[in-house]
Image 1 (tube, each protein chain N blue to C red):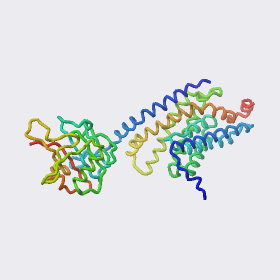
Image 2: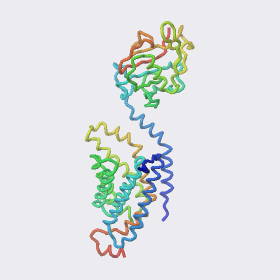
Image 3: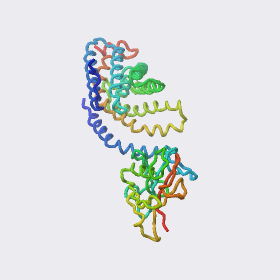
Length: 217
Length: 183
């Protein structure tokens, strides 16, 4: 039969293709979000999971550039640590099972992103003042998170080797940590405000039902 | 809301792309591991070459190589640079990562070829086999100084070779080294 799928793409073409698909997903999900009338944090987490999984898989050609760290960090800020941890687990497991490869490191990725979400939740009061994201502080935390996440994941080599290997291993990955950090800066610069606005709409303040009704009117 | 992060992010991306090769080199240098065992013929060589055949060329202080004039540059068999061992006693270059050679001359020529001409070889073939007079642009016959004459001296696994390069038989992990000798 016709072998339509046997088209060889250069890396640049495949990156362009993936970026196009990612843009379509982002656009469609944002359009769809407008139709969710009631504040619905769980639906929001589902949307974020789709963003994270699609972004991670489709940006795979770029070294260590992916939006998951920033998404989980924002989820921590808006929805708290437990939901951010759940989001981290769903994104890491789904993208690894689908495409990137699942193994013991998945657990370390979940823990790493979980820690990022926890940091977001802990500093939520300082990162989000009167419903407005403090972008400079957020960018700083996102860049620190890049290194923290990478080092937590790198520590998985301790399952196979002893501690003396860890320092050279981390040093060897420093350039990739920098890519991750700068990638996070880019995502914060362009994504934090629009994503934050949507998340704000679906935010339910814990143990303050009346306040949330007022806030979402 | 004004967002001054966007220009900052663009600048950061550009700076990182520009700095990537420099960072890569610096990290490589930091991660490079050399054998430290004066008893071993691999002393000072990258640990990753432990099982491989290596060719080294050292240049005299008075006539350093234009490129390899600081420490000993370690070159992989594909021509890429592994790193520079600055602690090595002497300056020059080593090419390593080879295996399977038994004939000294063909290994010598293949290893020097991997350096893209930086270690180009000149030799004459006489009754005694090939006589190497030039390596990396340095013709030993042209050297002058406090000696009668100079020549490229071949060392095999750390000891002066008893035979010429044309008669050397190599085993796995062997190290050939050329340096200037005088008489």
